[in-house]
Amino acid sequence: MWRKIENVEVNITLKVKELFEKMVDYRLYGIVLLAVSVFFYLSLIIPTVLPELVEKYIAAGASFGLLLCSIFFLSLSKRCRTKLNETDEGQEYMINRKRP
Image 1 (spheres, one colour):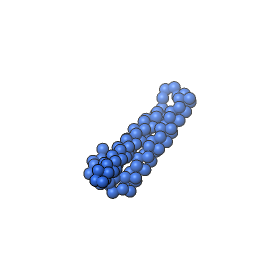
Image 2: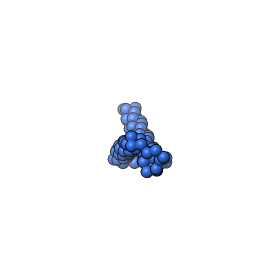
Image 3: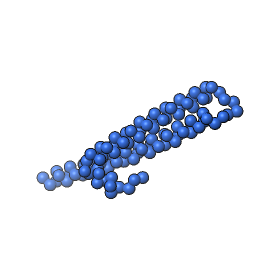
Image 4: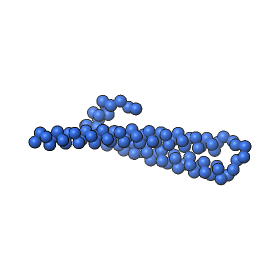
Protein backbone atom coordinates (compact mmCIF):
# COMPACT_ATOMS: atom_id res chain seq x y z
CA MET A 1 0.00 0.00 0.00
CA TRP A 2 2.79 2.41 0.82
CA ARG A 3 4.41 1.62 -2.48
CA LYS A 4 1.34 2.89 -4.39
CA ILE A 5 1.29 6.11 -2.37
CA GLU A 6 4.99 6.71 -3.07
CA ASN A 7 4.44 6.13 -6.80
CA VAL A 8 1.55 8.61 -6.85
CA GLU A 9 3.66 11.22 -5.06
CA VAL A 10 6.51 10.68 -7.49
CA ASN A 11 4.12 11.00 -10.46
CA ILE A 12 2.66 14.23 -9.08
CA THR A 13 6.13 15.65 -8.48
CA LEU A 14 7.21 14.74 -12.02
CA LYS A 15 4.08 16.34 -13.48
CA VAL A 16 4.65 19.50 -11.45
CA LYS A 17 8.29 19.65 -12.54
CA GLU A 18 7.31 19.08 -16.18
CA LEU A 19 4.62 21.78 -16.02
CA PHE A 20 7.08 24.23 -14.46
CA GLU A 21 9.64 23.54 -17.18
CA LYS A 22 6.98 24.06 -19.87
CA MET A 23 5.99 27.35 -18.24
CA VAL A 24 9.60 28.58 -18.31
CA ASP A 25 10.12 27.41 -21.90
CA TYR A 26 6.92 29.04 -23.15
CA ARG A 27 7.85 32.31 -21.47
CA LEU A 28 11.31 32.28 -23.04
CA TYR A 29 9.83 31.47 -26.48
CA GLY A 30 7.47 34.42 -26.07
CA ILE A 31 10.26 36.80 -25.09
CA VAL A 32 12.49 35.72 -27.98
CA LEU A 33 9.67 36.03 -30.51
CA LEU A 34 8.82 39.47 -29.14
CA ALA A 35 12.44 40.58 -29.58
CA VAL A 36 12.55 39.32 -33.18
CA SER A 37 9.23 41.02 -33.86
CA VAL A 38 10.70 44.31 -32.63
CA PHE A 39 13.61 43.99 -35.08
CA PHE A 40 11.20 43.50 -37.98
CA TYR A 41 9.19 46.50 -36.80
CA LEU A 42 12.35 48.61 -36.62
CA SER A 43 13.08 47.70 -40.22
CA LEU A 44 9.78 49.40 -41.09
CA ILE A 45 10.57 52.57 -39.19
CA ILE A 46 14.21 53.10 -40.17
CA PRO A 47 14.39 54.66 -43.63
CA THR A 48 16.28 52.78 -46.32
CA VAL A 49 17.91 53.95 -49.54
CA LEU A 50 15.53 52.10 -51.86
CA PRO A 51 12.26 51.57 -50.04
CA GLU A 52 10.41 48.78 -51.79
CA LEU A 53 6.79 48.34 -50.94
CA VAL A 54 6.97 44.54 -51.06
CA GLU A 55 9.76 44.45 -48.49
CA LYS A 56 7.78 46.69 -46.18
CA TYR A 57 4.72 44.44 -46.46
CA ILE A 58 6.84 41.37 -45.73
CA ALA A 59 8.43 43.05 -42.70
CA ALA A 60 5.04 44.22 -41.44
CA GLY A 61 3.52 40.76 -41.87
CA ALA A 62 6.47 39.07 -40.19
CA SER A 63 6.35 41.54 -37.31
CA PHE A 64 2.62 41.03 -36.82
CA GLY A 65 2.87 37.23 -37.10
CA LEU A 66 5.72 37.01 -34.63
CA LEU A 67 3.87 39.31 -32.25
CA LEU A 68 0.84 37.00 -32.37
CA CYS A 69 3.05 33.96 -31.75
CA SER A 70 4.66 35.77 -28.83
CA ILE A 71 1.27 36.53 -27.29
CA PHE A 72 0.24 32.90 -27.79
CA PHE A 73 3.31 31.50 -26.01
CA LEU A 74 3.08 34.03 -23.18
CA SER A 75 -0.58 33.08 -22.64
CA LEU A 76 0.41 29.38 -22.56
CA SER A 77 3.00 30.23 -19.93
CA LYS A 78 0.37 32.01 -17.88
CA ARG A 79 -1.97 29.00 -18.12
CA CYS A 80 0.77 26.71 -16.87
CA ARG A 81 1.45 29.09 -13.99
CA THR A 82 -2.22 29.16 -12.94
CA LYS A 83 -2.31 25.33 -13.07
CA LEU A 84 0.73 25.24 -10.81
CA ASN A 85 -0.83 27.75 -8.41
CA GLU A 86 -3.97 25.61 -8.11
CA THR A 87 -2.10 22.70 -6.51
CA ASP A 88 -0.19 22.70 -3.24
CA GLU A 89 2.70 20.77 -4.80
CA GLY A 90 2.95 23.33 -7.58
CA GLN A 91 3.04 26.25 -5.17
CA GLU A 92 5.76 24.58 -3.08
CA TYR A 93 7.79 23.77 -6.18
CA MET A 94 7.60 27.35 -7.46
CA ILE A 95 8.57 28.78 -4.06
CA ASN A 96 11.59 26.48 -3.72
CA ARG A 97 12.65 26.87 -7.35
CA LYS A 98 14.61 29.90 -8.55
CA ARG A 99 13.15 31.87 -11.44
CA PRO A 100 15.31 31.88 -14.56
